[in-house]
Amino acid sequence: MPRRQKPDPLAAKIGSRIRALREAQVITQEKLAYEAGLKSKGHLSGIEKGLVRPTVETLALLAERLGVDLLDLVTFPEQSLRQRLVDLTRHLKVGTVRRLLRESDG
Image (tube, rainbow, N blue to C red; front, side):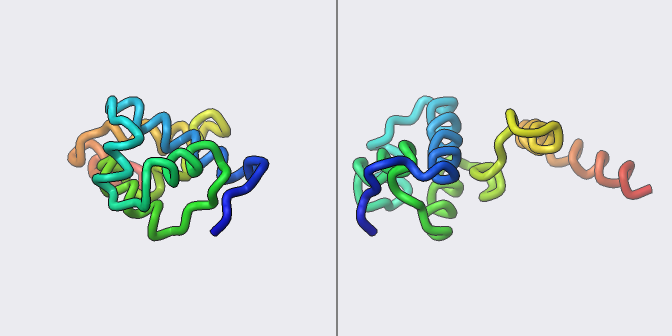
């Protein structure tokens, strides 16, 4: 897929989210691209800038390497309280999530 000249708004938000998750783990673009099995560092750079619309397969590879759920790549905590809550659950232990689910179901 050819590179865009102008960032796609949704792709740019996803790219920014990937960049933030990558930087939080102190991983370079080169390392993430290589370990996720992407075509190149340039491809990841294009994704992070919103110049490339990543496929679902590419997002799954990135999520797996970053150790997050695919959902985390398309969650924008600054956009709404619900998305902020979803983002906060990323840091919870599995037992805590189970307890919260039991409490909310009951």
